Length: 372
Image 1 (tube, rainbow, N blue to C red):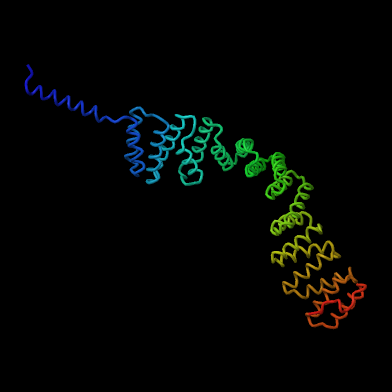
Image 2 (image 1 turned 180 degrees about the horizontal axis):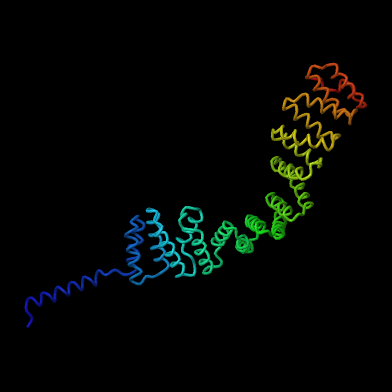
C-alpha cells in the first residue's frame, strides 16, 4: 500500500515531467527566439539562443550565419580581435553547410574589403572568397571581390582570370572591358589589353573612354603611330562636341611626343584659349612658331594670347615676325593695324590699313571696319 508521502512524491515527479515535456523548446523555436533577440539588439542573448538551436539539431547555414553575425556584432562593439576571428570562422562554417555563401558572409566580406574591419587581414578574406567561389563558381559578386583583392596584392594575372570570367559573361558591359584591359596592362600584357579595347570600340565607336584606354595600350605596345592616329581622331571628336579639356589632353599628348607637330601645337593653343588659359596657350604657340615661324594661324593666336596677358610688346614683335613671311596678307595687316591704333600709333596704323586695302583687290576704304 502506498503511503501518502510516496503518493505525493510520485504526483510531484509526474507534474515536473509533464511540465518539462510541455515547455521543452524545439530547435526552430530557439532559432526564432535568437532571431528576435538579434533584431532587438540583444546580441548576447541571440548568441546563446543560436548556439542552443544548433545544439538541439538545427545545424544549418542560416543558424550558423546568425551565430557568426552575433559574434561579429559583439566584436565590433568591443573591438575584440578574438571575437572577429571566431565570427570569421563562423561564416566559413556557414558557407560550408550550403552550396552558396550566406548573405551575411557577403556583407562581412565587403565590409572587410572596404577597410571597415582592418584587423581581419587580406589573407583570411582571400580564404573566404576562394572557399565561396569553390562552392559557387558563378557568383559574380565574389568574382568582382576576388579581382579587387588580387589587384590589391599585385597579383594581376589572377585579377585577369576573374575579370575575364566576368567579361565573358557580360561582354556588353564596357566597364568590365576597361577593368579587364587595366588588369592586362598591369600584368604586362598590353596586346591582350588592346584586343579587348578594340572589341569595345567596335561595339561603341563613340565611347571616348574606350579610345583613351586603347591609346594607352598602343603606347605600352610601342605602337606609336597607332597611338598617335587614335589621339588625333579622339582630339577631333572632342572638338566637335566642344569638350576642350579632352581635346587638350589628346593634342597635349601629340605635342609632347612631337613638338614639331604644327597641327597639334596650333590646336592645343586654340583649345587653351577656349578655356581661358592664355598662359598655357602662349607656351604651346611659342614652341610651334619656333619650329614653324611662318605659321600664320599659330602666330595670330599667339598675338591674341599675348594681348590677353597684357604682353603688348611681345604681340607687336610677333606681328612683325609674321609680316616678314606674309607681307601682303590682308587679315594680318588689318589685325596689326588695329593693335597699333589701340596703342595710339595712328600713322603706323594707317600705313598698315592702306597696305591691307592694296593687298585686297576690290576692297575700298569704306569696306574696312573703322579702327578702334
